[in-house]
Amino acid sequence: MPKGLVKLFSKNKKTSGALVSEQQTRWIFTSMLVGAILSLIASFVLSVEAIELAKNPDAELSCSISVVLNCATVAAHPSAELLGFPYSFLGLMAESVVITVAIAGLMGVVFPRKFMFAAQIGYTLGLLFAAWLFYQSMFVIGALCPWCLLVTLTTTLVWFAITRYNILADNLYLPQVWSTRLKAWVAKDYDTLLLAIVLVGALAAIILKYGAALFVF
Image 1 (cartoon, rainbow, N blue to C red):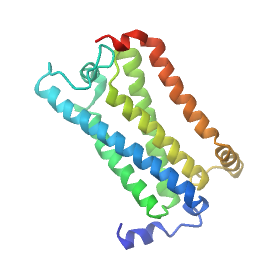
Image 2: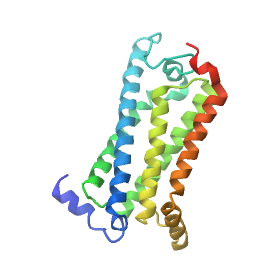
Image 3: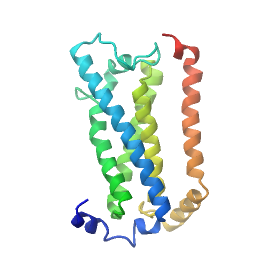
Image 4: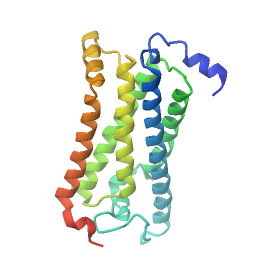
């Protein structure tokens, strides 16, 4: 990270990341980094396989494991593309940005409140989009893509990590009463409990809907 950029992002220490302990900062940005790397890998594989399907619509993909766990079925559906190109291409760009932010955070860069607030909005939109794609796979397409599930999982993990950081760093421009309540909520790890509920709920929904069909090859 260039010294000039570090200096630029460190100007607002009194209003942003200085409110978060070093241990919490490292844990949060490490979680973001790991999640973003996994999502980038998944996006890369999906992009390669999308190109393969474009060349040969009947190609057998490595992630087409069973009737339900089938990337090809999901990729062939219109909801898997935006304006003619696969969503995985967007993942390659978005996760690269998240990785950069996570590495900078681990290096001690303190981002301006406006930057982190914008990142919160952007990643919230990404989470909603991932949830919509999960819904499409579950209830419209009727098949699940293992790599897409990984992207949904990591997007959820990163969203919870960045949200925790922004609550603790007071980056969300909330009224003081709400900011205080959320900080107390996070201090009790209720956000971690909510994350566990969301993940267990999604897994339970998959099992209840598909059951043994997940293992029909």
